[in-house]
Image 1: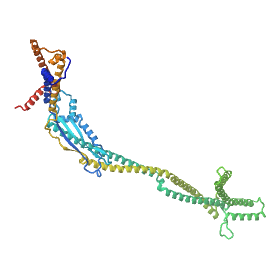
Image 2: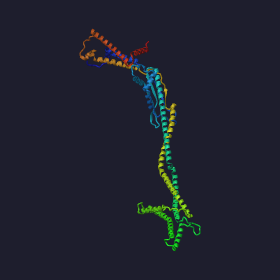
Image 3: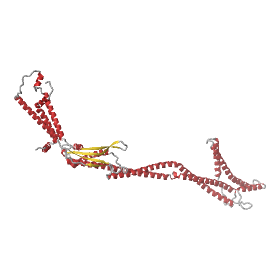
Image 4: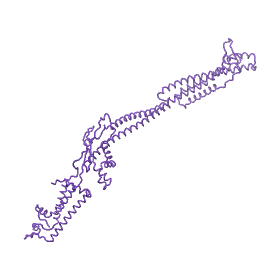
Length: 584
């Protein structure tokens, strides 16, 4: 059929009258099913509590808390703990929650549903930081729980609030206690480290007692003192050696058995005087005796011995004077020439030669003493020689000791900078350890005060300012809104079904449709004649509509059965809602 005119309100009314059952049945069916669902859906109650995040009561200038985590971070940690399966199962057992789902749902599904029924909402406020920048502060948070029983919902919400407050206190106390334990452990380690470094310093000082910086002046003074002692001892040693040589010469020229006394009878003649006397005697005897005479031979031997003794003391003195002159000469040219200069080499060689000669003279074999001497001068010389022989080794040993002490203290002075540097490094480590120890001591005191602050709940804490109330009205479902939606859906479904049926109908419904289609005048109108076949068809159509409505109702009941409630619960709630209707 071709449409030749615009549809007006009469056409709409005609379609409604003609397709009324096709429009009413889907509309009423959908509206009925949605209305039933709206009244059958269980009432869900919601209870809320508002928890304020209170700042630390003690000023931060006096007590600094060791809990440095942000409140948002701490809330997330607490939320994860409370939303754990263990905690939720404890709450479920305590309040006997979701018992109706135990037969059909798994434990994981029930736990997940409870997590969805619990909600936490952060309450923030705008503020200004110390630097003047706008920031957002978390000042409170809301906890809510949804359930079917108002009293249970209130109790569960209060329980959740208590858990959040308790967990926050536990988190803060544990954090402050952990900080205190950590600082105390570090303090003990630092005490051990200080004791170890102190012992190392003490042992090092004990090992280098004479090399410490404060001993430097003492060591230098000891070096100076022992050098003076060495100089004096060396002078005494040289004098003792010279005296020994002189005494040996005197002893050789002294007759062990005769008493050599001058004409005055006052003293014993010296070797030189005895030598002059013997030479005079020899001149006198040469005029009387021949050279081969025994007395002449004995006199010549004694003169030779006395000359050797007299000349030995002068020889060593001359050699030492020559040695001193060569050493002075070497010192004078050493500042001008190198070690390989010929003059330097020559003078060094001459010095070594003089030293060897002096050593040879000093180490000349001693003369044997006469047996049973009777001359007092001889005996005196013999005693002095033995005394010098005992004195010289003692002086030589003392010289070695002085040299050893000088080298010892010189080594201590030389080692003092190294010891000072090592000791300074160890002392620096000790000072750093002491500084760290003092800092840790202060931190431990602060940590203990902070722990006491948290135990007394004087720090940042959660406080309930709006406790959970028992809800008087269901939070959901919004039955009026559901019914209104069902009404709109019913109207839309009915209108759609009616216009769809009209669109598929190819018959003429009015004279205007016929005239518009044929462009011919209409002579007569035959009234509607209802045949038995049409009556039978109409009855069949009514049966189909009735069966369709019944099927729609059954499908709606099945939907309720499987997706909302069991059928027995459905009937009980249905009758309960019916009794609540205001029927007079």
